[in-house]
Length: 176
Length: 295
Image (cartoon, rainbow over all chains, first blue to last red; front, side, top):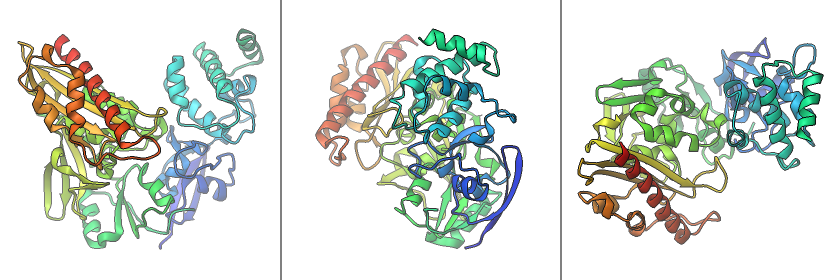
């Protein structure tokens, strides 16, 4: 079976590789790019842990072959924070609102929510629940995650691109 | 890596794709969004020696008004369909069905052609195609042909497509062209959680004449047999009658009365599914005729 040459831009960096066609995008990111923030849970499209952004769209990394991403641009959870390490509003909100416990599902939630809030900055609670339905979490009971997405939506739709300490503190107080 | 090894092909045209299909034979499979196929490969429920990816074939993408129909290219994603104003205006049933498919991450990759060709019994798009009398377009080395939706779904994960045929697009009659003047459309399903496959569901297209008589009825069921099904007896039972005299519950009962291959699994027994299916038909019928009556 012939290997295939691919070029994928990952978190802004061009990556060239020769891959087996059956290599999934998630495995490519983890094993060939050493970006192990993309987690693999079920490996057949149910759990959402491997969600990455492909050409800006949230997709299951385990349901795309790396060869299908040839010529494309991928953002993983490693590419969500600012280059200096400042957390994105979504990441900051997950931290503030206990949106994670063991952290295994978190990269999938963060990438999914980042795309969702970009396309729908002021969602209703019902829309948030629908948007989260494709990601499984076994620790939190989801309430912290819902609170985090609500807070991130309120922060971003208020026009604050980087959730600074002051904003996060305010949101926290409101949540109490 | 979980799937078995395969050779990868990404042709630039539909012609090249069908030539490959003809040349490679049974060992070849078309991949579009892969949202059903890749899990099947990962679980090794199926093994193919060749995958033919249609992602580079731009002619297979798009949503166009063609005469009295709306044509949707096979490679058009469910997300694109869900966001399309043209679809919302002319094929509202398709718009309403789209959010019920999987999750938004799945809809970003999954395609209408893939959904129809995969022909899962519990999927929404096959039922919509049946209820609206859509026409499927297929290309092979012998040329292009069209297949009415009513003849397209033939069995469990099976369609009328020949091994060397590629589904290239599907045409839906635009809403105003369904006979009857005033129309209404509804889809109802029950799933354990949002995004799960429906345990049972129904898609309804209803037309009313100015006097309130039913002039058109398309009732399709999903999750209730080996494939999506048309409820012909229920459709015939409402045609020509005054909508005010029709009890939606009767439509539901008629729609499931003749079903003889209802799935039974841990999500529901066949008997439960039939009751659920009748309720989904009744709800969808009620909504569709309400919309038609107000139109």
